[in-house]
Amino acid sequence: MNILSWNIQATKGCDGIYNSQRIIDEIRQYEQLDVICLQELSRFFPDMGNIDQLSVLQEAFPDYEAVWSAAISWRQDSGLRKEFGNLTLVKQPLLEDYHLHTLPWPPAQGLWQMPRTAIETLIRVDRGFLRIINTHLAYHNPVERQLQLGYLSALNQRAIARSLSTKAIDTFGCYTPAPSTNTTILCGDLNLASDSGGYRDFISTADWVDCWQHLNRSNDTRTPTCGCFDRQQWPQGPHCRDYFLITFGFEHYLKSMHINTQTDASDHQPIMLRIDI
Image (cartoon, rainbow, N blue to C red):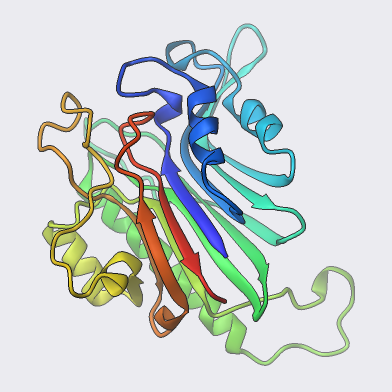
């Protein structure tokens, strides 16, 4: 199974131009993508290209089912809603189930802030099911981000507990036990630099394995996922804040991970994970 994750910055390239086709062309360079997890899509924002990026991407990938999660949905005088959020595209017919999550959103005491969401999809695989969580966490407020990381870890723990629990019998209709799995992939822009104490604390205390670290144990130089071309937003230069994480104990499923550091179609780089499950 091949999974792509990419913060597309509402299709704004490092040249300052919003260009959906450029994003589509980059994604199409990957062969046999089963799941495409995108962060930072906009719909009808005048200062973000003023187009419906959700519809454009759905039309570009008609063989995929779209799961859209709008963190922001504001009415305009025109009747169109300005929306901003995440999108997961799943190759048909692999999508079994999905859930949308609103992440913790505490008062920020004057800091820049916007709501954040996570898309949870249950994907059919050879061994049953795989859960994929696609998300984009808070940038300006580390307390908010820590709460969001805690929410996602608790979500994973509850899913594991449900998969191991005894199922009810003689059920029917909506009480029929839902499909479940104890294997989860968490991906997206966590806004957590890989050389930060926050990242080290999260990985050491949560039941996640960093897929890049596991696959590159002999390499101490982390491949950057952000800041490769846009030095105005990222004066610190190339660094990593986008990840694939997998539930602890299932890292043997991992095959390879590739980060495209050549494209400047966004301020973040697309990352692709291959998993044998």
